[in-house]
Image 1 (cartoon, rainbow, N blue to C red):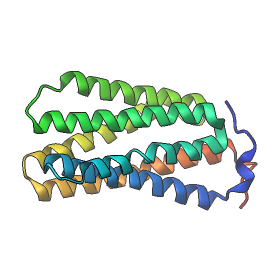
Image 2: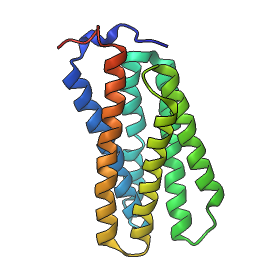
Image 3: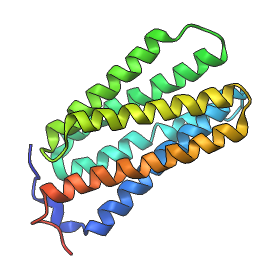
Image 4: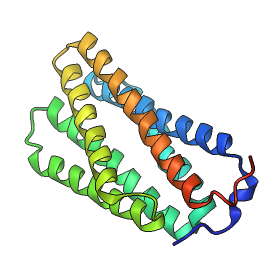
Length: 186
């Protein structure tokens, strides 16, 4: 699918700023959930509810360019991504086997790469897959450090998660801008 012509309502800067905000929220609320799950915190349901708003927000940006059907697919895949992540952290905290969940999480990332590449020919599916898998690898390292009580290491790894989120946001924005460059206001 190509740009639906709705781009003119946004500037490049507005798109980039919105995308960065949403992907930062994605990793911030994921971190808060990791901390809540690991620490058996009573705020876990509220943190989970807030985190699960993020896929709808990100999908809303893509809906602007690619319509509601593509956005619904992206929202569903991102929601599944977050739900699996929560299950993985809970299983690790409780000492339960999680190999099948981990495989499911990486399969979900591959599906996301396919979904994003399907809506924008400027997105390279293999590069997206590698980017999303790096995100999962870093989030896994962050959660494992938190589970081991290595809080300084968890925070340091989160710094890498944060940088990766910004790279992801910029890659997604740049792909939209390249595809729709004639539509954007300067």
